[in-house]
Image (cartoon, rainbow, N blue to C red):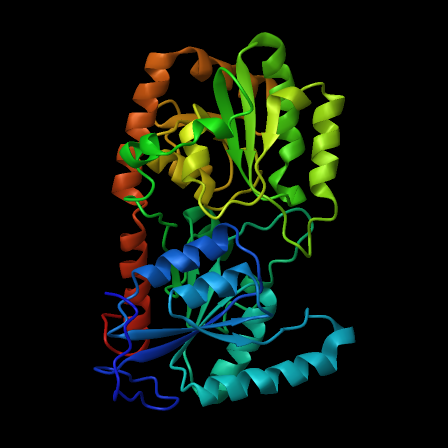
Length: 397
């Protein structure tokens, strides 16, 4: 496998039968920065069989994500898909024609799209041009959000969900539609492994002495870094040698001064001297080397890459017992799941791991074993390719 081009090969234009030929796949994505979803796509492309599949990335504009995709040999098309609002009606029509033209020009055989706005336009283009469409669902419905995908379940040919918790959105009378497929997120187990992590020069990332409680998250409000800081404040009052590491940053278009807000909050909690914010990191393995325990405080998380990366690195995780977390963490075996928003339970579980070296080490070892069994990015790529092969008539329905 790799990204070497194979000259002279042709693909049937707009054909659903690309058997024996390379299949062109258009990935519609709405982010220009890099977070968990973007890392999942980069991992998929790393192990995509390019003798069979050629990926194209359609994104709103240039950014970190497109730059990394280019390094991986992916062709980039910049096309902004407007939000699904009546005020954007004419923009949506214009974008629809532009998308159809892009698909025809590049002889796309499968559309693989992310987020509702991309999903709707990809489905319409797919129906018009006769191209199979895959929707990728990576989130749980949160708050007053509308489940657009469930409402338009009849449109795509397949829906890939990154956890059973997400797939349950489409359960009808106890039955899961055939088109819904669960494929768990995967990580590079060679890169995220305890032996390699131990060699990283990561200790200087910690804010100072002692044990380190770390968290990997972007700055969106949904990640709830305020909750982490509040837990850190309680822990700091009981364990004087624990330091706190926040690994991640904000998207340029969504940050909204979050870093300054979080730093001010740490100052208000009187833990600013024990917290370090690393900012966005292209490679987080050095930061993981600093962790003794990995925290996760997001509610309604579908399939957290931060949890999987921590487990693969042999770090025990303390997380909320909701969403897709129970599919990743075996409570009391590979990590600890606490009742949602029970901060005392969260703090107590974290303190027990930080102070019990033997249990922490054993739990981290079991976490690595579970990651090897379930969360290999190569497995993720093979299962995704099987979906593609079914759609082009070269796999078992």
